[in-house]
Image (cartoon, rainbow, N blue to C red):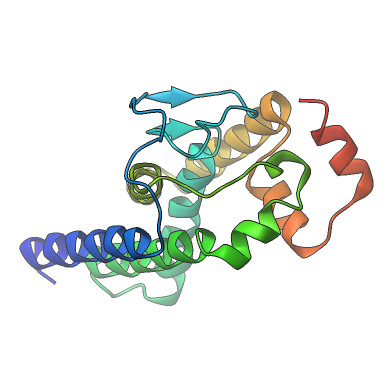
Amino acid sequence: MTARLGLVVVGGLLLVQAITLHLLGRVWICECGTIRLWVGDMHSSELSQQIMDVYTPSHVIHGMLFYGLLHLLMPRAPVLLRLAIAVGIEAAWEIAENSPPVIAEYRKQATAAGYTGDSILNSLLDTVAMMIGFTLARLLPWQVTVALAIIAEVTTGVLFHDNLTLNILNFIHRFPAIEAWQRRV
């Protein structure tokens, strides 16, 4: 896959993501009317609405995981093809995550009781964060990538009582002790 074709495919996937989210009724930017770089308050109505938030590290980790998995499954495939596949997976997740049934499921979790879904801006930048994680995993030694992922998980877990691991656990089965700890944010 040439660089130009790879960029066209990735751009096309981002466009499909944005259009699909728009058709699902997602807002382009926060209804507050402002665009902020960062939201670190777990109880803010701007969470999942702005450029980055406490869940951005999880999306970076997605990229690291996708790079590793696709590298193992398709070692001879061009990196741009693997990136396009990763973007397709992330875009599909972002669309699913913003569907009414998944939003309703998230709302059952202690940290997401008021979750209404992502703005299109936030969702697209979640996919860009995944691409950054993918690129980091490609460029850095695997040991550094694993260390960065662990640091991100522990840091977001300690600071915000939520991270990728807890998100997955809560989707599979809710644990009362974890939920009680998460409510203390």
